[in-house]
Image 1 (cartoon, one colour):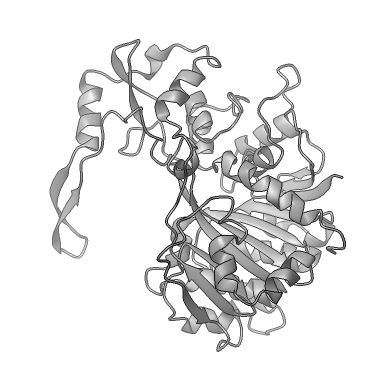
Image 2 (cartoon, one colour; image 1 turned 45 degrees about the vertical axis):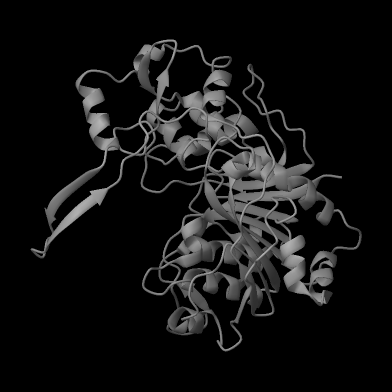
Length: 425
């Protein structure tokens, strides 16, 4: 039985790769070899303020053009989106403060973070029973001026729409994947599904969250000495009230939200899996890339620049207001260690900046940048996935903006078994 799904803010297809366990694509047609049970009936990808759309071009090269839309999500008629059982998407972390329209007829809308409200509009119109979203870990504590407000707004909005919510901050590198990348995954389920009803009926929800939950049995955690904290959003009239008056502080790294009650705690990962390393990725990439590594070398004056960027420093600076202060940052490993998972990849990967990965190539006996294929493998994408006419810079950017597909692949089996329960509609 195929399960209908849609992918919002699709990028180059990370969620779809993970769910359908995609490892390769046809070298003649360019189309992905999908082996899973997920039928993607619609996807949307749009990059504002650019003349070209390389992410969307990559998506349709790998998945075909049918039902894949390159349009500002705000302009999409949400009623025309096909019905689906699962909605997935990774969306930017912005400012999610909200306000009512002047007439109050349009309900609650975002001042900023409008992409979240487009997700809400899709949910309101299509009522998918299951939702799986991904965001950066700072979502749980943003904004700095009102810690936790943004996530509280999201939780309250989903509750008002009829969902229960579970979340978990997952560091892929702690679970046998080749990159230390912390991301928050959010799983929301309609309250009238069998799955939600079972959770609602559980008396000891704290124990459920510790020993199972949606995430914690897939990505094991230490269960001793856990300090569970509870709080409530019952006092707030709606999401506007939450936005204006929430003072409950940041959210912890895993939690459950049912009927305005929050149960959450900070996890300590527990994994017996073999560590995947940056060195293994570099070795694997040799099989798939036929490129001249001389073009990735850093030496001479350029090497001196990298050594400065990666090194510790204390610099006296003056702000625009005339205030003097000392900017400081610590030393980074240089080159990057090959016997550990890599550091988190950013969209600036490959450019001259402190966060770019530099490795010592034993064959060349020199330092170099990682290649585009190595960047893809760090995100567990099929090698050369983004080799669809993009520039080198664009390929790095796509991977810095993506998710570790192995996390989604690990979630997939349980997600599928939940959805395929009888009478879950």
